[in-house]
Amino acid sequence: MIDQETYKQFKIVGKVLTDHRYNTSHSGNISMRAGGKILIKRRGAMLGFLEPEDIIETDLYQADSGIMLSSTETDVHRQIYLNTDAMAVIHAHNPFCVILSLIEDEITCLDAEGIYMYRKIPIIEVDNPAGPTDAAREVPKVLKNYPIAVVRAHGVFAKGNTLYDALQNVTGAEQSAMFRYYTMLTGKPLKRDYSEEKHFSEW
Image 1: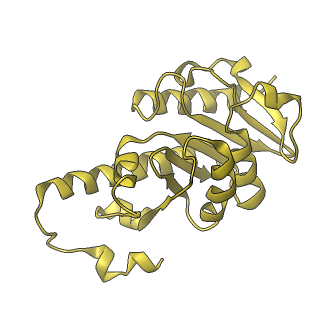
Image 2: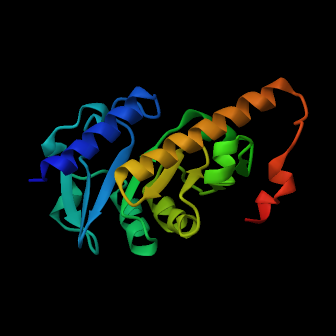
Image 3: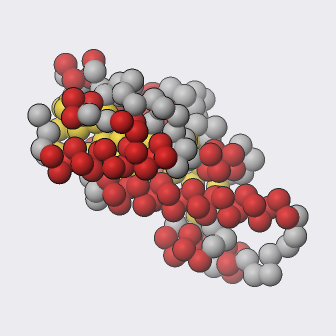
């Protein structure tokens, strides 16, 4: 049984993701590293209405009985923990990030906060966007150097020291993607393009 503070974090983060429409009623997953264990959302649980029993404990290093109940993307989370400095991981289907992933190879930030936090948000190309196998192999490579990445046509994976840190990366990246999307719709040139000035594409 998880402690109340851990459950509180899962519940708040799950509700924020659903309330912001980053996920459907049952999509997306969130997790925390706890020593040699992963605490992760139960498969099929409603993200915005998590109960304590919806948080499943499974081994960090190998599949165990918990894998039968945990999210179908547990192995993506496991590989992120094993190959990066992440202590918490969120997977969400951010609408603007996904839209831009369909037409761009990276999301360069135009707004001040996005420039400060991310500069750019990488987009990952995989053969099977909806399946965990390709993502488990490719996402950790990118999250070694970035706090968030987008799997083209699927959604984002974000890391953090806590679930709240990871949530900030999910919401911040989506805000930057939204600003970029609406700016592109105007069809007008930027008065000042910081991404070109600071060579974001080289980061």
